[in-house]
Length: 114
Image (cartoon, rainbow, N blue to C red; front, top):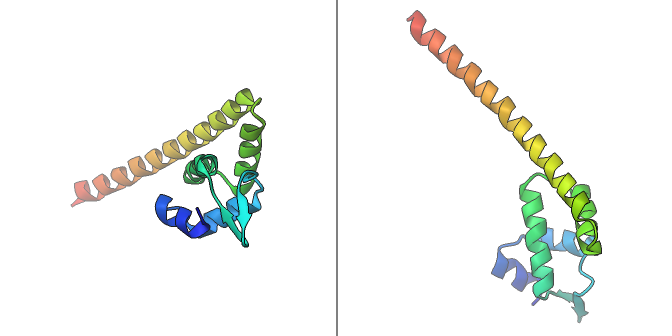
């Protein structure tokens, strides 16, 4: 399928598909008459890339992670990267929870003073 078809069928922005092409992760993708054509494996990798984008991976992080995945022998390193990202996400959640708690405290202070 073409880039436009893949974008429409899987709701993947064309910008992301073009970045995917530039990452050189689409070794099986064929160029036909100047257009990339995606197969099922490409769509699986794209799905993983979209998940990584949604979990706050940078383009560089995605490049690194996908190279590890494609090499097929770095499960431990992939797990380490995912664990580090999870910890960072939890740290952000804790900071936001503290901010919410502080806001609630200030709201209650105002209510109690009236």
